[in-house]
Image: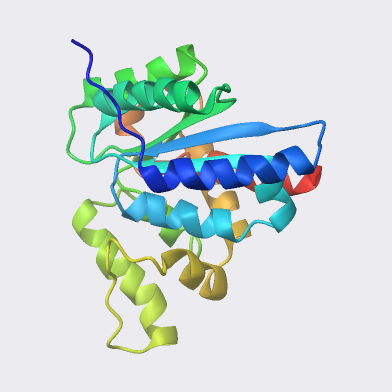
Length: 231
């Protein structure tokens, strides 16, 4: 029997309020984004920060829901599809764009590659990182093109922020402040450019598990930022 997906009550209430506002403000373009993250806090907190930083007109014209699942690779995609179906049933409207956000972590290469290929074949946005989402944070400060292990990310983030925030600063993985810290002390334009340059290093190669370091988070970030152009 298929597992039932329960959408948090606060999400349903928020959607009802925002949908009512949309009915009072007729627009020719309306899109519904669902972003489903592997992490339950790190990635959702970042994208919630980005979402809330978008102009009010964007949040009126576009519905952006962000979910953290604690799942990974193919199980994350399965969960994302279940959530998509549940949201569409409860909201009685289609989701226009589904994105998944996950890391290479220590998962086997075949699972990682298969998950990316599945997303490509089924038009699911895939903001993957190898090895971890924190690579996206680091690219706000510098271009890193040497393989980075998970245990090194914390030290590198602290090295970039301690000269600004003081020697006692310690990176907290599930921090709700990372988006604002990166906005104030880093440059998202640099992160996008650096991520694109990393992508070029592996152009034409489909062995995604070996693309280290590399991240496709910039694709989702750019898509969200472009929403400002339509409002």
